[in-house]
Amino acid sequence: MVRFTLRQCAYFRAVAEQGGIAQAARVLNISQPSIAQALEKLEAVTGLILFDRHHARGLTLTVQGRAFLEHVVRLEHQALQVEREAAALAAELAGEIRLGVFWTLTPFFAADLIRSFAEAEPALTITPREMSLLELAEAVREGSLDFALTYDRGADTAGLNLLELASLPPMVVVSAGHPLAERTSVRLSELADEPYVMLDGPGSRHYFEELLSENGMTPRISYVSSSLEAVRSAVAAGFGFTFLVMRPPSSRTYDGREVRTLAIENDVRPLRVVLASREGVHRGLVARRFAEHARSYFESAVRPKAR
Image (tube, rainbow, N blue to C red; front, side, top):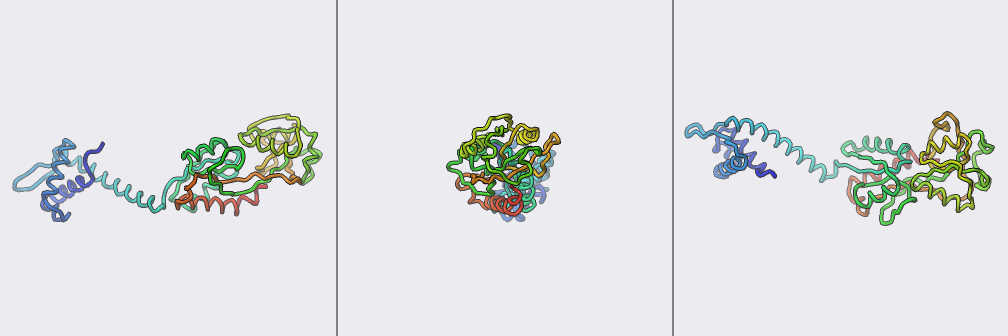
């Protein structure tokens, strides 16, 4: 623990630069005894001899004093920087936002959302973390994340603030060679006898299983993967159909085949993309600016593409 103060250091620097206690007292507009007492305490706690005392010529720095003065100058500069940064934080002109992102949303939204916010608010920093739905909800609840970009289903979000950013309808994905591939939409009953490729991501599987159940479908599961791209590749290879809510811009899969995306004609529940936060987080100016930016970003840039 530091036992000397910035005030003592400032008095020491003034004496060193002015050449004596009387001169420093005039510059600082304080009493000479106050400065003398501060110097005595500074030497006592540091164990240094900072000045040679001359009866006629005042004070001169010792070798230890000259070296210590260099440290004091750097310390004062650092203290001023801390003071400026603290003022910026108090005015909420700077700061860090700890943002968690659900893993299937990350490649579609995270980088561009963070980049656009950095352009709009260069003094603010976003630190992203990619996590599962369950991990995101818990991290926001316990306070290790400020916000989570996630879905409104698949995890317990009770007690969290949910700001809706987008509502994404599920889609059917089939291979380019599938009999329905030239269609733009399909009724789920037309897929009743088709094998199903399951996206087994945390939360995603539950949502799609509910979708199947609500429409009276119990398809044979032909392929399972936690990777969105692996699921698309399996569909392209002819393993069956799948449901997705996120649509990559290219119909081509990693292995060079192609898939087709069809709208669902049935009345099905969409999956909402939300910005989750703890109660009270939105009261701060920094948090409000980020939440508003996220809303604007999804409305103007992403929402029209999320089909």
